[in-house]
Length: 324
Image (cartoon, rainbow, N blue to C red; front, top):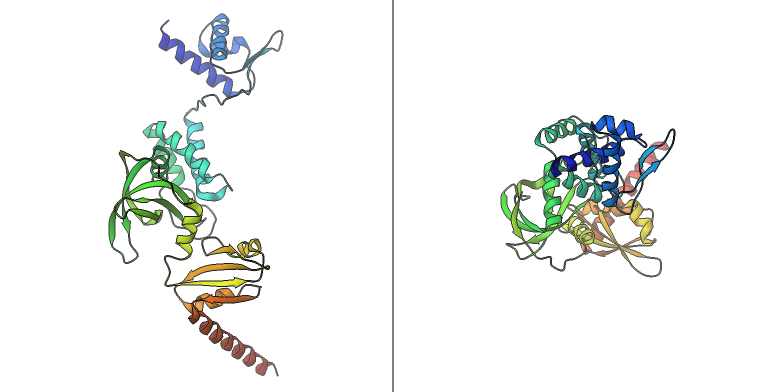
């Protein structure tokens, strides 16, 4: 028998051992179409490769694949591959706490070897499924896979990027990491044309392709902190800084990371940095906090807060007069 045939049979044996906890030698021989003696030789081959296959003699005995020092190759049939890919796509969307990044890495590996016919099945299932969460920016799963691979392989990506004024620009980026806020996905990378670090919203990307141009990793800022600074300040007309008399963790519990950034201060205070298109909105947002607040900047925000206070006082006064 050829080496290729033997290798294929050993892989089939490994897949069978992964399918259920225990097999007898006769059952394995029947599944593989060989003799029990051949099964024993193939088991030895698996052991030589480092996979712990345990054998129990006697009536009721058999073979069992145990836990080893490394994860064996996972062999999936079509249904298992589809179910795994769909689950990974859901996890990469942030519905499983802490699993998003690992799910993307696993999805990139699985997508790389999955036949085209199975990719179509996965897209059909994914396209027919909705998740009951708040409004989010829809991201094409293929884009996630493309960017995840580019980050992993350190290759440049090119894409068309929609600016806030509606125009589109071609960008070439050395990607470092994707960051999700729960509602939106962002890519942090080195913008080759602008010679600086940038943050890009994935829902504004189009026609993203990974090039064959490999790049050497640069020293870079912390991706999470960099993206948070970008999304809480840079896109807005006004950026407010206010001292809040509370522990930073208490403020973070009520201010989502995509809305505001909380910095350490002293004497039981912290500093909240939040952006907005309207000073009135910023004043109302700060007023909603159940803590003492001192506006640091901009000075116009203090005027907006005073105006809001007068409006609220007038509203309360009108309500009191009607109740008399």
